[in-house]
Image (cartoon, rainbow, N blue to C red; front, side, top):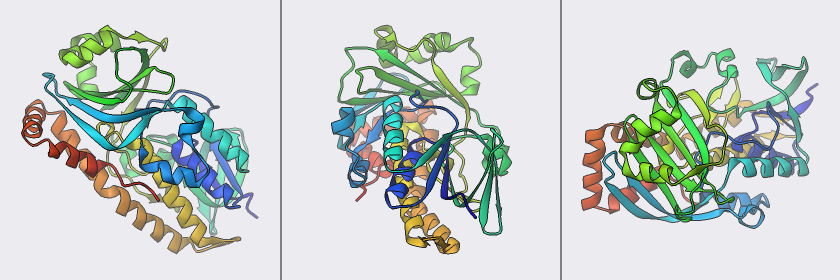
Length: 375
């Protein structure tokens, strides 16, 4: 007999949203997260408004409860500080993961989802059900498991996922800064040698600065401070920002071995959500919204194929895979192409000149990496 109908492994945006959606529809849900809330995470902290109608359908009103910053403009610059600015017609919000994840955690508990702070060591599928072994020694059974354990996890190794077999050369670094001069309504993406940095304000008034850099570019320098001064400051926009900014964190947060390779959406009958299913390049500015959207797709597939304790697993998996690919596959592909262009100085400069001549191109690129409002 299963302990739960659905166990969700990982309590980021995708996992928490799925826990809220499924528990409010009466499913017996357990979410397992390895660290307590609230806490900061390495993330761009710009959330596209495309997810607002869906969250409202779950009785979640982020504007009312968390007072996010409203963002409606994008500024993009290359290494030589050539820049373009364009309106974000759909717009978005600046919201820290510290506040957002904690808020969704409390919503999930209010809806009846159980939450356990623990780590999952392995997941085995046998006789049409799952057995999970936890670090605490507990063993749990479930009819269905959703994998929302983020960009990179020990579980990826245990499940022998293909992307985890190859080393990735990408490193992400994040910090919060005081900089009153930075506009509230702007998200900025600035190129530098070997990477790019995103800047946007959060609900606290702090500016979130999150940059992605190749390890090859970063390893020549002793620390993040030296790297900023020697490399990032070659972009005049970044130099001006950091020279006028006061760090709030005692130490930058970082995460290594980030992979942008294609990932399996379903692995050993586990439905993968959010970054566990596929990671869009941060320069596309839409990873948070995609994680939440993936929770909607998974939850709806579960609810349409899981009646009582009767589960049509084959149809569930086919439905989830189809809708995930329809919504995200092309966006992820576009992100990979954009990254190759924008970290190449010649291609970045050439593309910037094209956008200068034909401004509508930047809006077209944005439309290719953002979705429509999720009804």
